[in-house]
Length: 307
Length: 178
Picture 1 (cartoon, rainbow over the protein chains, first blue to last red):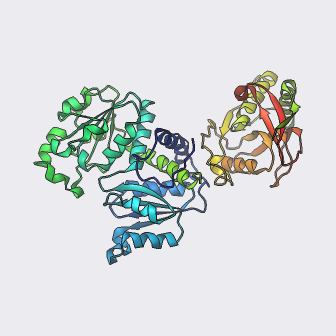
Picture 2: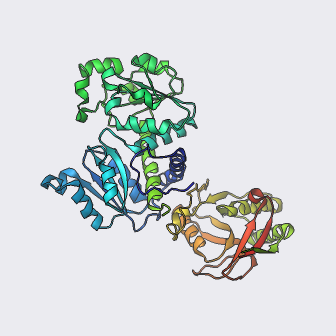
Picture 3: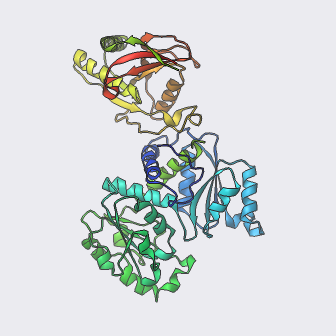
């Protein structure tokens, strides 16, 4: 299996083989982070720019650490401290950055499609690190990696995704990835947060949280996307938390070896209780660790692609 | 264009050569103290296992055995068609060990360079020695094997192929001329 894509813009464009290639490669890269010398010379001389128009702790740090562990040079630009505040357009920013000859540009933007536009005007590889409510491909890949690592398989899993599905790029990318496998995906949340036609993506909808978590192998909790107006879709945070917040009683209804996932940042006491977030079923920090490995794999595959 | 193949070693000769290399390793190091074997993917792994089997017969001891994938350390990584990265698996502490690095064919010396760099990132061995089944000569870097099965300095159009029963179904070393 060879990789030939210049960019990683979304999971939707990936084949099952490409997804598996990323996961298999990430398996090898994961070992690097556990060594004493956490660095290999693979991407020596390559330059990676992270361009973030939305706040981020995990994703941006994860990309930077991934690039550094591969010996690439990294430069981080946040919208708040860039010429964006002086009125420069994304297009002009991209062209200017391109003139400095980076090899990869990692972009997060609140506008869906921003990475796609960027990919058409630059020769560098573009990685979508989240574009509005559209896609977050590296998150889905690290989620699949974590599921496969913990369950030794993806096929046959019952996966329940709970929360603000409508505004979640994480849910969307995960669904696009998981439907390549023989999985049963159940989406749950208040009806206002579940897109009306979501069954067309091959998922089930169960508004009753207690039924949604029954026999789940994986429960993935999502945050209310306040920055995308998510809060106006529910009567109150308290009510939301009472009905859709993941509590210990839900875990009992799931499979005995269920894993609890969350892409972060968590709103403790809202979509997840402390007890569950810090409990034995939680793999939330494993997701973060695996994120570095998956992003190392992506950086490697994109820069080494077959021309 | 047809390909012409010339045999260099047959099944028996492969086995004898591995036996000789094993004896040389034990002789040069005056036994097996602190020795460990690291095979370079892919065929180096099987050669390492066979050397270990022979050491077991001779000395009644098994040496620690590791697998090294050098892909991340190659100097031509982006000239190749995206080689797959596989796992390195060295389940022992290689600090202060004498490493016998094992590969099937040595040619330019670039694989050896990459392998040494990869090992150095994993610890500080006391010594690294190199054992190869075939030394093709034509070095591009100042590297030399400590143990070589056979020396074959062919032309650049020739390819030396080592086949091992574990993955190729049979043991032989052949030269392929295009």
